Amino acid sequence: MQQDPTLYLKSLLLPDTDKIKKKMKTHEDLPIEKYSHILSQIEFSIASCYSENIFGLTDKKIIAVLESLSSLKTKTTQTYSYTYSESQTKKSKNTKTATIYRGLKNSICDAAIEALRKRPVTQHEFELCLRFIMYSIDNRSWIPGGRGYLDWIANWFGLLEGRKKQEFDSFYDDLSKILVIEKGFLKDEHYT
Image 1 (cartoon, one colour):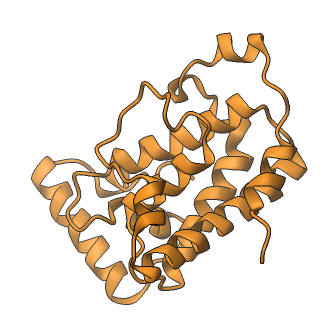
Image 2 (image 1 turned 90 degrees about the horizontal axis):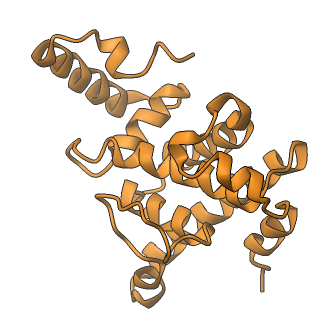
């Protein structure tokens, strides 16, 4: 039986300090540049899983995995449009869903472990990083299909190809015309 990677991940986290908790209370207080090593690793692992054609992967499942990695999963004050609990996956008779969940969780854990080995952070800082990604997912929950974040992040890393890439570009072309906003701005291409 394979050991749960979350145990090793949690062992790499530094103890929380009152100073950090007071300075950063929510994901909105997170200085992105300082934590980009964690955010980029985790988001790249998500985009990679999606680009490897893990069928059934949705934004909801990503939220479930991120919540399972956060000790705030039952005590959070932030709510997201997507709700999908780990217990739903565990109780599910659908082994395909459980396999997707486990694969994604392991990939995210591996990415986080790699980032934490380079520069460790506290439990609170790590949870805020996860909350920031969940906010990013929720921010795209209005996009039809349940994969608004997945398409966006895979495109951002240059991993969206073929029909998915064409559909993504077409959607943002149409949206930019409707909203009269530059397509690059909508797709966050100005953040390189």
